Length: 361
Image (cartoon, rainbow, N blue to C red; front, top):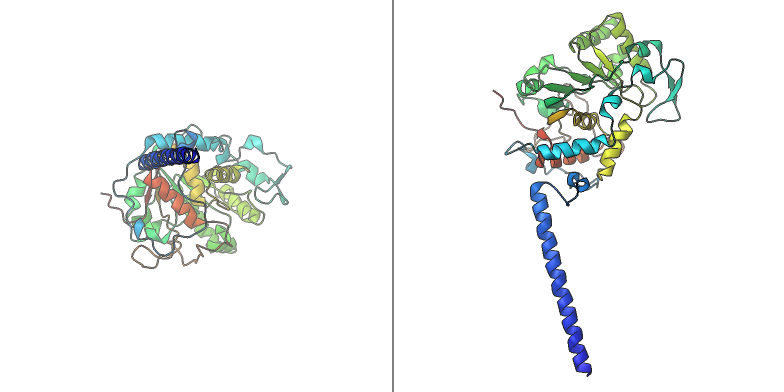
C-alpha cells in the first residue's frame, strides 16, 4: 500500500513538472515573438513598454553597438500612434506648450514649477508677449527634426538633411551660421534656457553682447522662441531682459513660455514607463512634445558620451568647450539613461536617432 501511494505521488510530481516546463517554454517563445515585433504583452497599455531598465548603470566606454543606428531603420507608424495617445494622457501638448494670456493675470502671485516655496509676479513686459493661442494649435507635420547640441554633430554633414524636414526644433539658442554644413540653418521652434544669457552672452552687461543676442534672435525669422521662464527662481531677470529686447527692437519672433505643469507632465509619463529620470533634459522634453504633432521624428545631436564609437573625444556642445559629467548623480539630468531609452525607441521604429555622418544628397 505504501509503495503504491509513493508511486502515485511520484507520477503527480512528474506530471506537474512536465506541465511547468511546457508553459515556461511557451511563455519564453511568446516573449521572443513580442521582442521581435517591438511589443511586449497583449494589451494596448503594455505595447509601449520601453524594455529599458530604470537602473543608473551607465553604458560605460563600450559603445561599439551604437556605431550605425541608421541601418535598416523603418518607421513603425502603429507604435508612433500608440505613444502619442499615451503621452496625451499626461500632456495637453497644445495648452502646455505655452501659458496663454487668458490664463495669467497681472498682479497675481504664482509659484515656480520646480520650487514651490518661491513665487513670482507676471510683469507687464512678459504679459504683453504671452500668446493668445498656442503656437502649435492644430499643427501637424509629416517629418520633424529635434536637434540637440552634442559635439557628435561636428563633421557630420547633417545640415541639409536637417533642413529638409517639415518642422525643425532646436535647443538652447545654439549658433548655426558657422556650423551650417553640420547642423543646418532652419529653425521653426527654438528653446532658450535663462542660463544661456549669463553663460553665452555675459549677462548682457555691455552693448556688444546685447548686439550679439539681437542678431541671433533676428535669425529666428518669425519662428517660435520657447523660454522656460517659470521653472525655478534666479533666471527671471534674464527672461525680463530678453523680453524687453524683443519689444524694444520689434523682433519678429513668436514668444512661448511652457506651462507650470509642463515638466511635471513629461516626467510623469516617463516615470510611468519605468524610466526614472530626475528632470527631463531639453532634448527629451522636445521629443515628448513633438509626438503630439509629428508623424515621424528624427533626432540629431544626441550623444551623452565623452568619446565616439572609435574612441575619439567628443565635445559636450558642438559650439563651445563646456564640460559635463555625464554619469554624475549631482546634475539634474540623467542623459545616458535618456539615450538608452531613445535608442530603444529607435530600434522599434518609433523615432530615428542619427549619431553618425549623414549622406543626404
